[in-house]
Image (cartoon, rainbow over all chains, first blue to last red):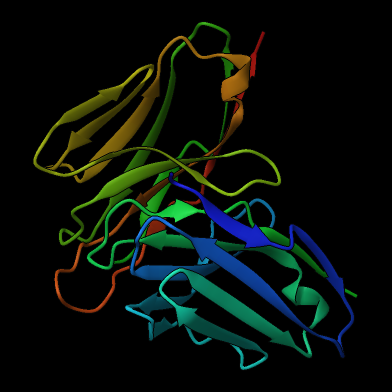
Length: 112
Length: 116
């Protein structure tokens, strides 16, 4: 099973809302990632968790807060977002030494 | 040094033809080169990947050619079909063992349209 599951698939939120994106994988991978993808652009790395510890934070604004409760789950907490944060948010997983990375279907986020 | 350059930006191919997408990299430390296929509104799907110790890898209609000395690699789609119409991203990374996690460096993508 090479599936990464993301929920919800679509999310519309106001600029004062707090919401969370969820990601789950059961491939035994110990590295999980959050990417942001704008239209017609490649995915941009936001965060990397390796063995449940945050190992990379690509200077992402604090209104995005990642959390890795266990080796299978990854959350992205959202608060006070801006309209320009509207994008497809992708979760991915791989083994920590860098090999095949598998992406979820993404959450289409719209900030109004 | 971290950049991966991908061309062309868009490509139109007739059904049954060969689609060719090229990528070039600068960082000689990269040692893993995957290709991803992405349909609109979906996440990227791993298509095929190669390591620099081989010059070619084939999986079905998809072939990666790798030229280590030129720091270039390409994706060939044989007998292209309308269902192959998607955006293709090349990527590169350096594997880490027992250390900090590496991450994928993506090319800018190629939008492929296969005409019936």
